[in-house]
Image (cartoon, rainbow, N blue to C red; front, top):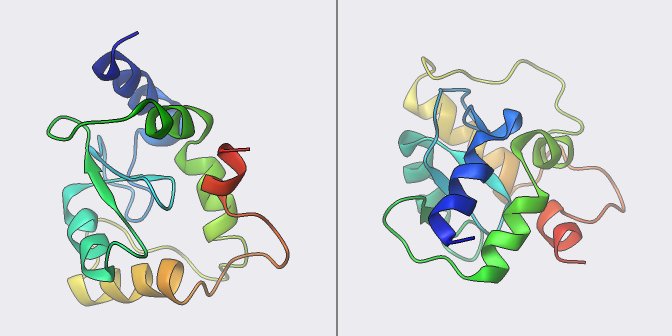
Length: 129
């Protein structure tokens, strides 16, 4: 199967029909280092974290390797968020949240790793095993 068909299948998973961070519909960007599918707005915030934390790929503009595709075929936002939001004790922001609220949330979630479980493998590492 070619890369575009595989990406379409990845996006069509129920867990990937909404942005992993704000819940907006039809996200088109994927963090290959965090294993989440996000919208363009959240993608910009992921990019500001730096590629050492979140390396973003466009579903339609970038080239995808078989390894990247295979990893994302094993994941979806529900699986990944069970790790990244495991100890989240408040409501998530929404697509109508302010930019400051979203940026703080994304930094807390992925950079500061405020809500991850103890002694558990991150989703991307798990998907590659």
